[in-house]
Amino acid sequence: MKTHRKTGEHQVSTLVSVMIERDRQDAKFGWIGTPCSILPGDDDWAKFAVLGEEVGEVARALIERSFGNDTTAHLEEELIQCAAVCVAWVEANREKRAT
Ligand SMILES: [Mg+2]
Image 1 (cartoon, rainbow, N blue to C red):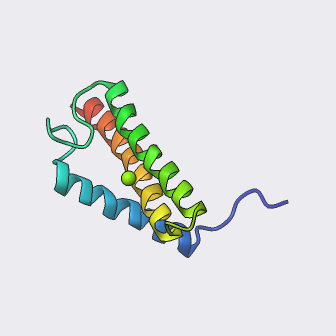
Image 2: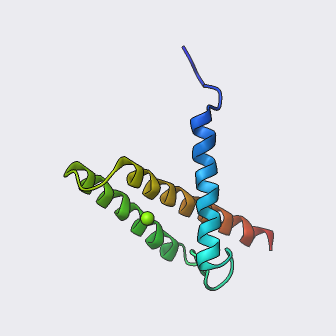
Image 3: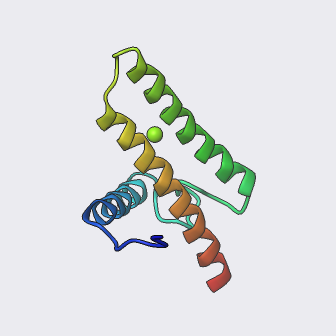
């Protein structure tokens, strides 16, 4: 029984896409820890609201795709944005602990 697998090229390219999206978020909204970052302040519920908004966009892309009005490529873009918000949240926690 296989218990793990080697890191594959699709996993690496996916994580690179998440990193690129994190850079895009910082360029658009400001660095984590600044008042204008994608996840400003210390309120985890506000952070959850941002993540929820991104999850909603995944749901919308999925529904639109099921009606033939959207693409898997766009669904993946939305999933990457969700992942990047999760990364930003962990980054924010770590930044807070480090200061
Ligand atoms: Mg989105």
